[in-house]
Length: 431
Image (cartoon, rainbow, N blue to C red; front, side, top):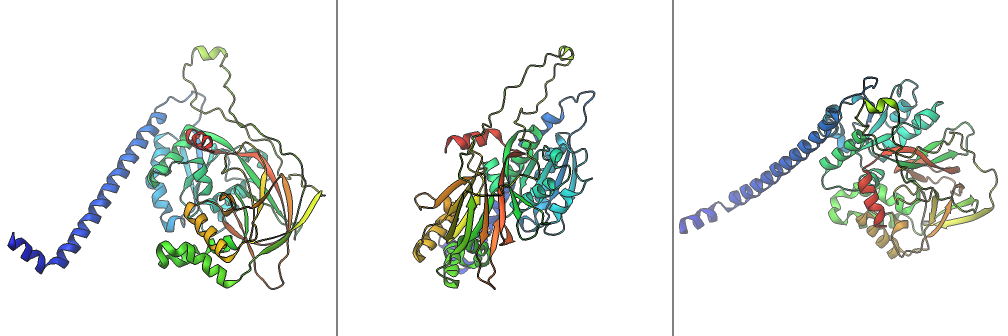
C-alpha cells in the first residue's frame, strides 16, 4: 500500500490527466453506442414501411431536399447523411438533394419552375432561416396555388430551430430528434401551418417575404444577435450581452405608426376528419390500406392576398421591443397575428427579462407577468420612425432584414408541415 501511495505521489499529474482522459473517452464511446442504438431502432421502423407492397399503378414518392451545408457549423451534410438519408432510402423514397451555396440561394432554387416537378414532398435540412427562404421561394412562384399543397418537412440542423421545436417536442438527443423528423415524412403525418405575408411598401415592384414565425424589432432582438460573440463569458454570456446592449444606448426604444382593423378573429378548427370507408369494387381484391394520415388541406389563399386599403385604428407605438408573431408555436386554434409591444422598462428590468428569456428559451413577450401590450389582428401596417442616419434591423424568422415600412397579412392554414402528431397534441394539452 505504501508503494502504491509513493507511486501516486511521484506521478500524480500523469495519473490525474490519464484518469480524466479515460473518463472522457468512456463517455464519448458510450454516447456513440447509444446513438448507434437509436439509428438501428429507427432504421428498423423505416424498413417496415419500405417492405409494404406498392400499388400496381402507384409510383415511388419523390422527396426534394434543400440542404444548407453551412448549418450546424458546417456539419449539416454529415449529420443529414448519417441520421436521415438511410431512413428515407429504407422506406423506399426517391430522394433528390439540392445544396445551397449562399444566403438566399434556397429562395432562388425553390422558385425555379423545374425544381418541384413531380415532387410529393419538400424537405428542408437547416434552421428557421432556410425554412423561410424555401417557403418564400415556393409561394412566389406563378404556380404557387399548386406548390403550396406540397407538404414540407424539417430536418432541424440550424442555429435556430424554433418551428421544429413546436413540431417535434421531444429532444432527448440530436440523433433521435433528426430521426423523428425524418420518420414524420415517411409516415406522412402533417399539420396545417399559418404563414405571414410581409409586403414592403417602399418599392411597388418589391416581392413579398413569407414567414412562419414572425417579426421582431428592438433592443432584445439586437442583444440576442450578439450572444455568440460573448462565448468566452460562459454561463454569463446571456446577461453580459444585455448589459453590453444597455451600455450602447439607453433608453433604447423603437417608434412606429401601427395601423390595423379591430374585428373578431375567426377560430379555425384543425381537427382531422374521419376517413370515409372505401366502397369501390376493387377494394374487395386489394386489402392493403394506405398508411397516409388523413390531414386538413390548407385553405386556398391566393398569393396576391388582398391587403386592406384603409384602417380603423392608428396609433403611435414607442417600446423597447415590438413583435408580430403567428400562433404556430403556441398551438392555438385561433388564426391571427399577435402584435406585442413592451412596457416601460428600467435598466435592471431589461437585463433581468432578457436573461430570463434567453435561459428559458421563451420570447420576452411570452414571459408571464411582464405586462406587454398585445392585440390580435389579421392584418396590419407598420411605418417605422427612424432617425436619419441610424441603422435598424428586423428579425424575420430569426433572419436580419433592414427596417422599412411594411404591410403584413396572415394566411391561415396556408401550408402543411410534417410533424410528430402525437407529441404536438400532447404539448397542446399542457397549455
